[in-house]
Image (cartoon, rainbow over all chains, first blue to last red; front, side, top):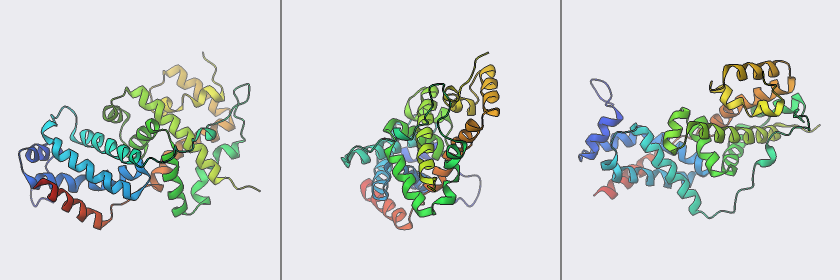
Length: 202
Length: 78
């Protein structure tokens, strides 16, 4: 923390770091490491992979500082690097393909009416009352890992890292409408999944 | 004036919550949801889902990882 004056902006730190100021780069790392780690954990669903992805992301950022032109915000640029590092890390594990969450999409009858009852449809909102925190955390990480990758990255950035749709579109190189579509599909799947977790069979 | 069903309404929710639906479509969706207990329940759980997953997955960076990250980066920059 500076002893006087406002905190330097990301962009000014990046410019100093690109010019060889090591302390400026370390200030960037300090500022972003917790967020990059959290993002990587959400994208990899694994603490060890998240740590490796975080290291890789900052190393790539360091090596790429000279190519950061300030056309986007520094945070957007860094999130793009971190997202790619996390997805590469996960792919490198050659896991079995994750079991799809398609089964948790909402169902409708022939007239387009919800097939489930209001109580069933609302169940997801009560999952925190039904599962303890640790179990819910495990289930939530695992469920994110079962989303198709394109939905997962959009959902994690938009809804979990709470970026705006416009920022996510910039990070992922998509139109905002495509981001909304992907986030929506992810929300539908996860909503159904949480609902199934919450349901207490009589 | 378009009629909204539960199924078509679900597909409008994201755009509705982001404020990018045309006014008339948004009004038709609101009218349907107001008269449909199933959609009301669905919307409630749809809106809660991001917060629940966000809070459930809010990992903190362990202190030892913070130190090993800095050491890793210092070693690579020499």
